[in-house]
Length: 498
Ligand SMILES: [Ca+2]
Ligand SMILES: [Ca+2]
Image (cartoon, rainbow, N blue to C red; front, side):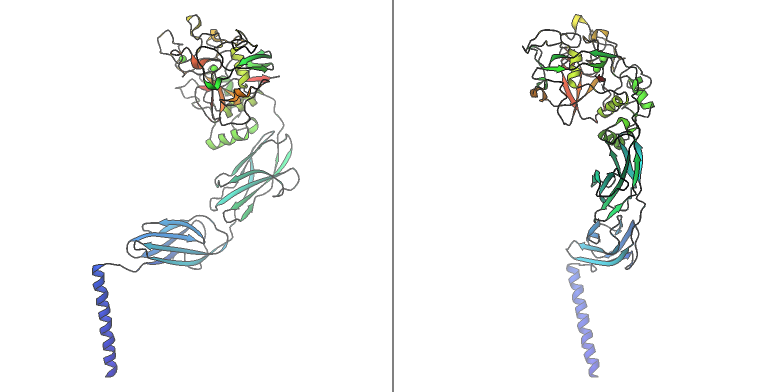
């Protein structure tokens, strides 16, 4: 009997406790206790990637659920379903997989399991995508299941290659870049390459050793261009005219000595450029430098901007028109294709302004012309170049966009070079620097050693000139654009140096 009394007493106490809890809930609902249970994968499982991790989370007002593998948080979810994809391989071995939840009251709960990551194998294959006489474009396996933080490409001229050899490419923090362009190689030579790939946890994978034989140097292509020889001389470069103003980047006028060279009479035409395209110019690394090739690859460039777009005068239907829509890289690739180069800014300016006129700034050398054809934009009341002017007026040149090269015969420079002002603006070889003239480089200046923009000269068909007497079409006008810039109104011509 006594035992019965005792149990009855405990029973009564329990009922009181439960009732007491119920009363509290009415005033401040706390809901079910926060709890986390990982349902996929199971404790002890061997996982594969990508691996889906799922958890059951119970509780009230769950604020966030965090998924952690080892030290790495790979997902944070605010709402159910609490399921996340663990994408990247960690190092092989046992890994603690943890899911933690927090509610709005600040309570937390976690569940953790131990899973096994098997050793990962992938075919880390290094191969040659393209090769020329002086460079090679390499590519290797892209393995999206593993997070790489660094690729290192080593090169050797021996029979083995490893990480003690010359490091020729270092790709950091860019897990998606699995290419390298190695330049400055010798023709018809054997090179051996290997790639070391480092994961974010420091593991290293090593590719196969790849032997590459560079090609022989191909002969330059003959594009049939008319070249005008220009004798070496000293001329005034930059701005010094007392009237008409000028940009500060044109100051100061200074004497410059130029060696003799030949320059294209016309801007490079669409017909000429098509020969480069038809010869596989865009897929042959022979004609490209590293920056240009990687820019082209990254952007999938296979033709000039608006090539064969009937709204612009660029493409197969416009053989006699200047090619536009080319970056500085494409202009340089074409130049190498024909064994020539872009003019230096000094060569360009000399071919445009010449050595006639007075010595206005007293440096002992004539000023040359303000425009290729003379000192007045509308000399003789005529239009001398393709620029932008209202249609149907006396200023109109008759072309909305570009015009066939050499259309404006009265616009020739004293050397007979055509379209130096107007039609398409023209890339030059030099980096652009608006204070470069203050360096007063006298002998064959080639511009600053580095920069962010390449020099562009001559003005183009979308620049106006009728309101300001052709201010932007003067032979001294300078501007610059990043080498990757492509505009339908920017083209180029070339020079041959002796
Ligand atoms: Ca025009
Ligand atoms: Ca031009």
